[in-house]
Length: 287
Image (cartoon, rainbow, N blue to C red; front, side):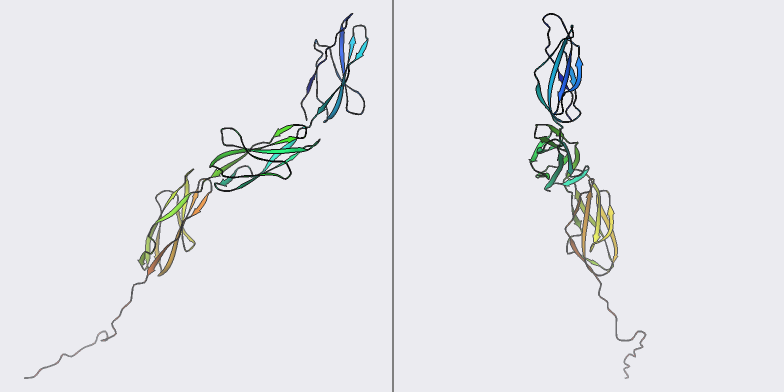
């Protein structure tokens, strides 16, 4: 609803004084008394109970009790639109490179919503990211730099009334990266396979929470601090794929490329002849 409006009148009496000015408003159901003023500028602050078109008149009463009505003026009291950002939700984490749909609901109880404008503020003031003139109100937010943002929507109605939504806080996160640095792909270990898997992980806009290691997709341990590593022991012979998953401080997750290694069983050998414990006679020479 529109805020109160200051109504003023210029009232004079050539042969006396103006005692007071009465004010009336008519929204179509007849004149309704809305107040009076005895001040020097005969001002009255009035707020209507509902939106609509009103015809305002004033009546000056002089010190002898005589009254004179003013010509009427027409004013429109506009109920401002309402607007709220509905997506993304407050506290959302968005990945850089994503195309994000920013949506809002907007209504106007005494008219129509002409447009909804969307803004993103990373700390240096709101920047318009688009507008929509038809419900459902939405824009696509693209090419977003990492950082913290406040998203707002501004609704404008058919009478020029403007309302800005409450802000929605989101974070745009640049994903971390991780790579296994040891062992090298193609390395062959002797059974039982015992070795250390190492990885390098970085996050360009935050910090690393943990690096988790996998053998053939099964978790075998994690490390929360650099240098990131996990020890493996007693792997049976076979071919294995090693991977690592990194998690950053905003929950961003990235997987490494796989590294293939082999655990090789040593050959076996046994003597088949002569039998264990055999007694063998040496040749005897006579003469």
